[in-house]
Length: 74
Image (cartoon, rainbow, N blue to C red; front, side, top):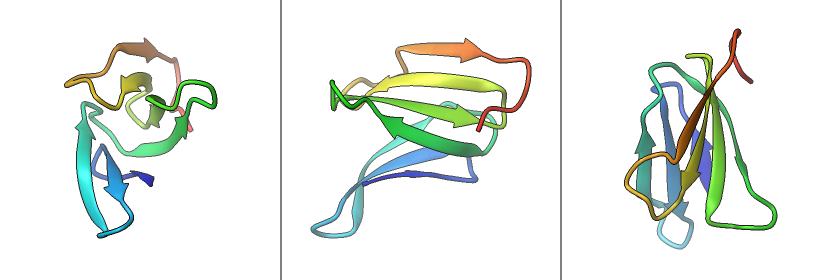
């Protein structure tokens, strides 16, 4: 399970033990949404109050790309 947080993080959970297995932290504002890629399940996008969208690979140590927007991204 993947969650978006008000602290600027996303957390990837192992639902079998309710513990986060990975925390994604690069946004400087609240993360309003996150979405799995429907074709490549290793990729996710996050949308934030900091006016950016970030592309992530769940196994990479940092985001793969940041896309700036003129307004808050939901």
